[in-house]
Image (tube, rainbow, N blue to C red; front, side, top):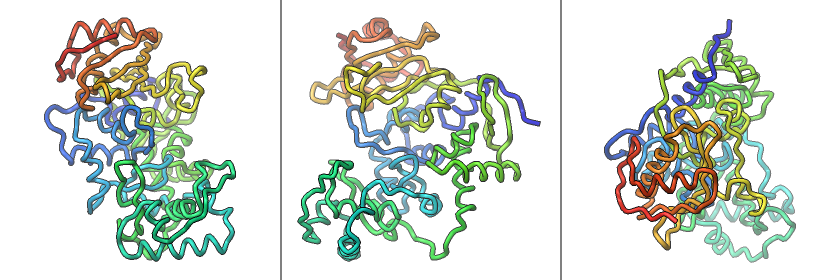
Length: 415
């Protein structure tokens, strides 16, 4: 018989699994703490938008507070790697032990290499692999120059109009032949042979076993969820994912549950903990793993959320780079943020409270913004008069009141 949970209990299970149920640790954050957090959430999504911070740095701040952003770079760039790039829930840093399982199930052909003339594609692959066989990791531009590929960019309306060499590079990355050794300061990939990043098995893996491992990892990261939730975490196909969930349920790794207000068949990972209460506080990246699956977010937290980066400015409801604000077990507000590095300020371009936000929302959000400003080496927080929470937030920042995790003290200028 399925265990019956309240929606509050389901939320706390989800937050506990994601490392967001407790207050952040005090004191300096070690590489081991960052590594443990990454192992808990299984992956972090990569995105090139840098209006606030690169997206893969933000989940660690949300869970750990102020930490050295060079730590994830070291975890991904120095052997033995705890993180590596591959396709999962979009481009992501994944755990290396998941690479070959994911490789079994990646079916992406979005880079357009498959439409190239076969002889050209084969020639480019051969020349690219020969260049990289020397061992040095190179950017797409460096590889294009090394193979003396001078074809103009293809203008077929697809993607970024990459040239054929870049398309083949990305195709080799999707297939797992090439990996990413590191990123440049301009966030360009430095490609290398995947075998230079981790040892590759010579034995073909059973795809069904690979899928079960990935679904179990997704369920552990979620704590509780639907088949859709678990499949979406690594972007796995729905029907095979449903079979894997059934097999994991049969083996006792997943437990059928129900939650009042969540109208879907639910499963709880056998090791998922139900915290007695949720006391965390966090600003969440638009690409945070807690908010990946929008339907889950709305069912679990009653929070309707969409990324509006690609929405024309005049049609945006909340702003360009909007972060949900978690307080306890509820998402109580959202803020449109920008790191104005030239002026040394964290700019709040819009602040909006949810209808049922508690009275302490503005004060707690002010404390969180001060902490984020400190982490980003920004001296001030500036609030623009946009949104239902803006005036109250500005007042909280002016008052200099402390939130539960306040560590950053300086004069804060508020517009």
